[in-house]
Length: 236
Image 1 (tube, rainbow, N blue to C red):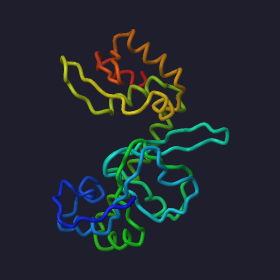
Image 2 (tube, helix red, strand yellow):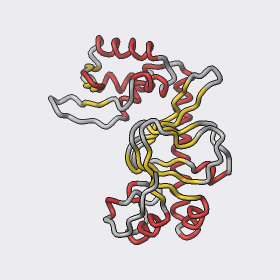
Image 3 (tube, rainbow, N blue to C red):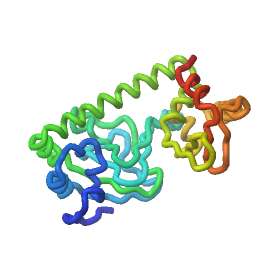
Image 4 (tube, rainbow, N blue to C red):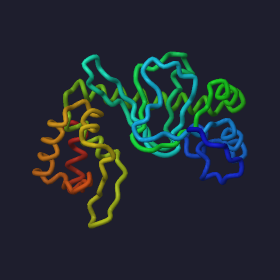
């Protein structure tokens, strides 16, 4: 469902202000970009696009989360990544014209800012920094994929999960140990890390028994030995 564009907004309210792609622009330039955006609301589990779709849009996540996943011929879902506020999809079709080999689905109610490729091309021509930041983002994503692939090839699930925990936002609401909240169901985290839910459950028990973490209700994890977790993340 599309929403009307509001022209008089503060910088922090703009969808584009939350995206590294447009962060180098002035407020007036961001307003110009926002006027080209088409805000779109998604319900939980609503599909953004399917594999092979003809995508001619750049989609920026304003609020909520979007899951990027592939489905094998036998029906097994492999989560590639999860997008949050400020992340975007559809740049591959803009840069190369290729159709996606994956699908995108809202994990929760979400709002996107959608740009037609013709409008995006106009913006890139007028503000070259947008194109440069897009390439920087794609390059960083490729580096992350290469690192993840190397970890998968090594077969070290512990290293992958330790790295995953250390990338989550931390807080110190009780005591001196950092705490994190698992943002996904454990089966989805297992898919994201290229392992099985059973293997992940065993790993969580092992880390708890070893005193590296403490598991609490509702996906809350306290990292009780950050040095040990850091060592595990290196695969040593």
